[in-house]
Image (cartoon, rainbow, N blue to C red; front, top):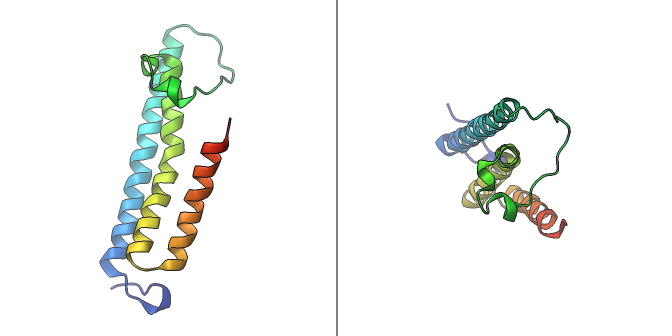
Length: 125
């Protein structure tokens, strides 16, 4: 049995593929973020670093440069980056799916969300 989409369109298997893709991105993104964060926390605890307070996030240029990923702070920042990237990837997938299905209204909203995210990333200090 298929579900009727917007304006009476029948999305059928394509609608199911969107849901499957979103579910996969969310599951893997969350699992990777959790694993990286746990590794960072275990390394922090085993190194005997008593400071568990908030730390500054690393800029991306610093995170991916000169072996920062191999540090405890780098691992924690990478876990945070994976967690933040997961929903953005879902919006990208949804935008592509809506545009391919010619659902222009939903595609425009998804692209607008991506534009807001991009603008905030490019204009933040």
